Length: 404
Image (cartoon, rainbow, N blue to C red; front, side, top):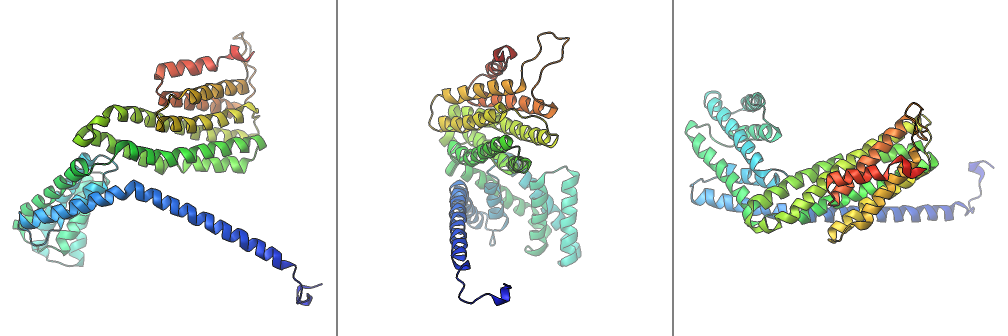
C-alpha cells in the first residue's frame, strides 16, 4: 500500500519513535554529563590561575596607582596577567619575552605616533613595524604578540608623548615582577597535583585507544584501526600541555620556597612523565605501522593484540601505582609478558645466520613489534627502573630461545 494510502490508525511506528526518543535522550544525557565532567576538570586544573591573575592584577594596579602615581594603570596589570597566563611553561623565560615585546611596542609607538598622529593607518603601521622588528630579532610567539599588543595600546589608548617611554617600561617591568612573585611566591601551583590532573585524562585516552586497537586487530577491521590511530594522533595537544605543565612544576619547585620540600618527589614524577611521553610516541608509531600492515594484508597473529592489551593494562596500572605510592610490580610483569607475547607473534629466528628467518609478521608488523618493545621499555623506566636495566629486561623477555 502506498504511503499516502496508509490508515490513520496505524500505530506501528509509535513504539519505534518512542524507542528512538528514549535513546536520543539517553545519549544527550551522557553527553551532558561528560561535558560537565570536562568543565569541572578544567576548573580544577585552571582555577588557581584565575586566582593568581586576579591577585596579580589587583596588586599591580594598587602599586602602580599609589606608588608610581600612574592615574590610569594599563600596562602593569596587563603584563602581570600575561605572566600568570604563561604559568603552564617557563615563567621567567616568558617574562623576558613579554618585557622585550613591550619594549618594542613602546619604542615603535613613541617614535612614530608623535609625528603621524592617531588614526587607523597609523595604528596599522606601528603594529606592523613592531612585529617586523620582533621577527628580525627571532622572537617567539609571546614576543610577537606582546610587541603588537603593546603597539596597539600605545597607538590607541595612550597620548603620543615621547617622555612617557621610561615610565611605561617601568610599569611593564613592575607588572612582570609582580606576576612572577604571585605565581611563584604567594600562590604557587601544586606541582604533583597539577601533573596528575594533566596526565590522568591523557593516559586514560591512550589506554582506551590501545584497547580499541587490539579489538580491531582481532577482527582485522581497518576502519577501527585507523580510528585508533587518529585518537593517538589527537593526543598531541594533551602531550604539549603535559610538557608545559612539567616545565612549570619544575620551575615552581626550583624558585618557590613553599614547594622546595617537593623536589625529590617531583624528580620521580618528572622522569615518569618524560618516559610516558616517549612510550606514547612509540604507541602511535606502532598503530601507524599496524594500519599499514592491514592495508597490505599482512598477517597479524593473535599474540600481537594480546600483547597490546597487556601494554594498555600495564600503562593504567602503572599510573594507579604511582598515584597510590605503591611498588609497581604488577605493571612491570605485565610489560614483560607483553614483550614475550610480541616475540611469539614475531616468531623465532633461524639459528643458522645463513638461513632466512621464519617470521610470522610482515614488514610493517615487524616494525610495529619493535615499537611495542620500545614502548614497554619506556614504561619500565617510567616505573622507576634504571633505563639500562629496563632495556636488558626487555631484551631478555624477547629472546628467540624463549619461544622454542
